Length: 276
Length: 334
Image (cartoon, rainbow over all chains, first blue to last red):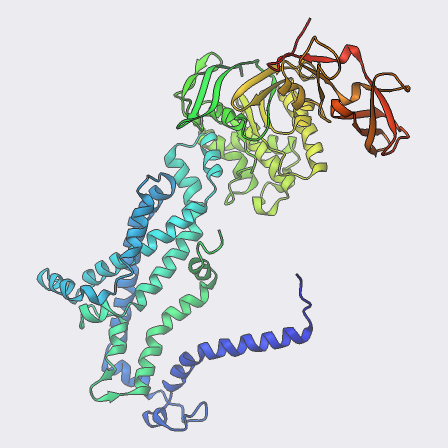
């Protein structure tokens, strides 16, 4: 039944939407503001919102104390590497499950998903020991491997649902038009799947970037990504809020910018399968 | 050039027999329509000819060559799908050119053929648009353009007009018929709409639950249906069926008379009844008559008949147009 929408409704609901948006964004906003405060102001009670002495000293300290660029590069390589390798494995897997399913396909998919349901800490010790014995500790390759394996179920699931959405009769039309299976893949299937591939790539890059369990436990310095960089600021000496904020802002900046420009694809990726 | 023969074609999905035993001879250049109720197997039969499904038994000959083991890409046929199945990421030009590109034709020739097909179908202004920017009718024409540009041995149409609105459907029906006559290519057309079948076909194949009930020209099916099913399926409104016994005849188990062949007569002449509903269209009058033990009879009168619900009528069938069926439902012909 249609409800009457008055301009008062619009004003109230817009204001409410902005309020909720602001509340959700508030922690991040607070963190960015804190990064420009002195350590003293960061602790101030009552908390100072905008009226404080703005300073860049935290950023300077953070950069001089530890190498932001080194960690950022590691993050890019680890997130990028693990996502790409996962995609290379997942595309053929999802293709075969979507277009040539067997009786066991559903079971395999559910089993893969089940591996994500276990808390990683449950296998921390065995993985650590294996990594130590194989010399994979604190290596980028080691981190790429674990993140790739960890995200693989999600990548396969997402690609599977995207492939399933492709109408079967468009592929049949390609066959009637004289395309062999290889050309069907190249000229019809892949171009149609590109938005889905892009969403999956993006979402998994972000998940890998933010992964803070394995990266913290399996790396120290050489291969340490930005997650370790942030964690290093919560030290036994106490919490250096301002510097921590500066480090965190630096750490999340690249991914927030990436996310901003790819919003549409991300929303698509996160709501996959929701309307079917 | 486009002669298609089906010999003993069978198709089962597991224990279910979709097509029981199809034998058909389709002449080159003919427009043949597969018609029947939902689930009768007409689309399956089309897909078997296309090669999108494999036969369980029998042979399919295209110009004398058995193509049962030949993949769809190599059979030389074109298909127009009910959902159009256009490539969404390609422009109209790209969609039409795709088949030619797969065939490896040189670029200049592809462009020439695509432009010719687009001109025939009035698509020239839309060549650079994507399918999502086209209306239903335009998309349909792109699907047809994609089919004709490859100059196939035969066109296969799978209910291509069912997604269009009524007015557009009538217009496209004429366009498709004209195009086929112009090109002279064999066409196999699947529809559940018997009006489309009657108006477009050179010959009609009536299918029912996997069996070919009758294969003949539209008028043959109308004037000489071989059984109760075909008699009831072809013709709108549906043929009236009355039991032979109820009319006092012993030469047939069932009698059939089409609504247009029932005369409204003078008092006392023929079968008595009462009008339950009268529909006045101006050009025609439809009467739904309660005729007692004969059941409900439908009458179609050309012109305006001043009768209303509750009026008594006397109906007499035109004896030359009376159909007789035996107890197995088969037509009795003298």
